[in-house]
Amino acid sequence: MTNSFFEICVSMVLLILLSIPLGKYLAHIYSGKIVWLMRWMSPVERFIYKLFSVNDSEEMSWKVYIRDFLIFNIWGIVILFFIQVFQNHLPLNPQHLPGLSWDLALNTAVSFVTNTNWQSYGGETTMSYFTQMFGLTVQNFVSAAAGMAACAAFLRGFVRHSTEMIGNFWVDLTRSVLYVLLPLAIIFALFLVSQGVVQTFKPYVNVQTLEGQSQSIAVGPAAAQISIKQIGSNGGGFFNVNSAHPFENPTPLSNFLETMAILLIPFAFPIFLGEFLNKRKEGWAVFIAMLILFVAGLGLALSSEMRGNPILKNSGVHCGINMEGKEVRFGVIPSVYWEAATTATSNGSVNAMHDSFTPISGLVAMFNIAIGEVIFGGVGVGLIGMMFYAILALFIIGLMIGRTPELYNKKLGESEMSMTVIAIVLPCVTLLALTAIAVALPVGLAGLNNSGPHGFSEIFYAYASGVGNNGSAFAGLTANTPFYNLTLTLAMLIGRFATIVPALVIAGSLAQKKMSPENRATLPTASPVFVGILCATVIVIGALTFFPAVTIGPVLEHFQMTAGKLF
Image (cartoon, rainbow, N blue to C red; front, side, top):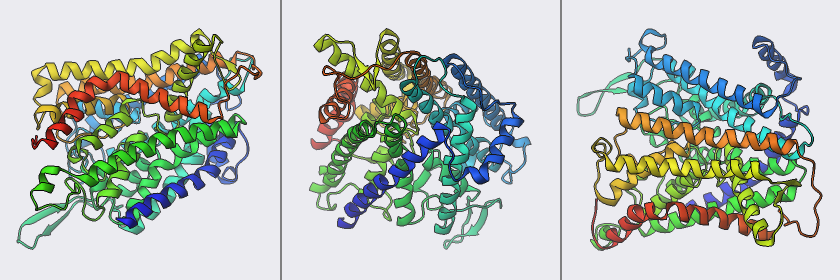
């Protein structure tokens, strides 16, 4: 147990140390400065621009940036949809797996294009090698890169003035893949192979068990997908049980570094904020606010899991800690650390079953996702979400002191506030509305494997995961039905585009404004006061929005569990 706590401390220290150079590196990439990788990769970059007729010296207004962003995502959905539907006619399908139904194919296509990676299927029994590689893995790269590009464009609104230009989407997208995601994914994939993660094109292996029965062992090109699923905040598993599978996460060392990979780029983005805006203290202030919220949630979840289920503890046959749904080779503490990391970011991968966690741990995971994945969040998009809360916090403060709010030397007006409200409120309304519809209809309740508040939590978590573009699940819900495939598709689309599109509108509005010099009435955004206000805004907005839902879900289940009732 002591070793596990020590591992968390070491992991956090290493992440902070690594995030500093990575954040500076990101600032160089999106500022157009020369980085060392360009010596080898710049010919590839130029070839890509030539192939797709991209003028890398031409910048875009926010309207054109949004247009190209949407076009790229629409084509990604269409292509991935048809790959899945017709995978039985495509190569690299040694198991002769059939094509997917239209509703599952649409759900999965939207899921991976929106960087959600929700999976209503078992990977090894549903997806061919071709679909896994050329469909899902490709989207793992480009969906993450699209989020990073959107964040870079958003921050340009703060550093530019008297212009409509916020960058070039195709350049930002290409550089995100070539100079950030691809190098990290290659290095990490090689490490995963060294730990025993499978990477092969051979058919599944048929063996005889000790009982004399025949068993088919699923293999495939897994390491390549797993590396980018962790680094790019994707989370979609090659196998059905994700990183609880020994072929995805075989050793304690792989578990340690896969957890770090979830957090690495999200940790670096607040540092990137400070470097890009030339306001390092402000970047660290945002980082500290995220870290406080992350550690608070992790501590609460650890406390709950270490206390375990009192019913089992009082029976005298259990040590007290909650090992249900967890791999023995990892134990409680690394599993809870992973849960906090994967829900605080929009990663969504799991090394334990969240359905089996105690209600309070489940509550922490729900809160992390439902507030908009802003506690570090997905690559790029998490920082955008936290900036929405910063804008809202400064607006509230401005109302209190009778002054126009401003952030990073830019006045915040009606346009910025309208877009911020849309980005914060619309996903929340979608989550609550879809949950209400599902619990009111027999078709929604039909997928439940548990009753009472735990069953409600399964439904609420599913839609929170969709709207938050997280992708993890309470596994007790059977979601591969037309109802859930289509409603979750709607949730994922709103969660993705209701965040990024308003951010790009704000970027365009801010870029046209002049810089506003600080004065005595300006709230310092590098102060402990700002950090406290930002944390309080996130918590209060989350509590006011979701308190009724979590009360009839995990909170009620917690009290019933302590009273001796199980579901």
